[in-house]
Length: 379
Image: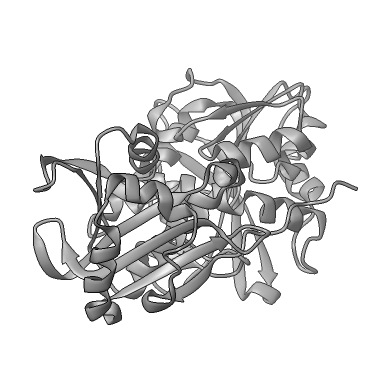
C-alpha cells in the first residue's frame, strides 16, 4: 500500500511570539534592511496582527505568513487585510507549504469578513507574483510609495475569485482526497456503483465518457472499465496528478472547464459528481448547457449535489477535512437543482438519493438525457 504523506501542519502564532531570529527572515532583511525597527514599531499594534507558521523538522520556519487587519491598499479600512509577509523556504516549495499558508490567509479573511486582501511585492520576485496571480490576486495600476507592486484579491467579488480558490483548495486537499478514497465513509457510494448508474443508461458499446472534476480518480477508474476511452477535466494540477495515478489510462486535461470547449456530441456519457456546486448559479447553468451539447443524442448525464434548505452562493470554509480551506460553494434546494438541470438542456429520467449521515449531507443525483435542437422543456 502506498504511504500517504502527512498533512502539512500550519499553526497560528501571535505576532509578539514570532521569532524574527529564524533563518527565513535573512532573505527578507535583504529586501527590507529596516525590518527589526519595523518589528519594534509593529509590536504596538500587535492586536491587529497574527502569523501562520509551518515548521520544518528541526523546528525552524519552513514558511510564514503575517497578516494585519484594518488596512486596505488605499489606507486604513475596517474590511481590509494586508498580507504583510509571505515567505517560504526553498526546501519547502515543492511540499505545498505556500498553498497551505495562503489557504489559511483566505480562511482568516472569511472570519474577519474582509472584502479585500492585498500584498506589496518588490520587483525581482516574479515567482511570488506568479503564485499570487494564479490564486486570484490582480496587480493594481499604481505602486506603493516604496516602489512595490500591489496585488489585490477582491473577496467582495467572489465570482472573480472562485476558480482560483477552487484550484488552491483542491491542490491543498489532494492527498486527503486520495486517503478518503482508500478509506471511504460507511454511507459513501462505491465508485463502481456510481459509474454503473451512468453505464446502465448508455447503449453498447460505450465509446467515450467524460468526467468533470475527477477528484481522487476512483470513479474515473470505474468509468474506464465500462468505456473504451475516458476523458477528465480537472482545475487542480495536484488533484489531476492523484487522479492520473489511480486511472492511468484516462486523458486528464488540467483546465477551468468554463474556458474550454469540446465539439458537439463528443461523449456517450458525462459524469459530473459533486461538481456543479463549485460554480456560481449563473455559471453552473452555462455548464449544464455545455454538458448537454457535448453529450450525444441518446447519451446520458449524471449530476448531483448535496441538498440545502435554501439557495445561496458564497466563499466559505470547507471544514470537513484536516486542512480547512476557503472555496466557493453554491447551494440549492432540490427543486432549484431540478430547475437548474431541466431549464438548461437536460431531461431527468431518474432520481437517486444518498444520506451521507456521517458528514451530515443528503445527496440528490439526477440521471439525464440531453435535449438537442427542436426539443423543448415544458415546466
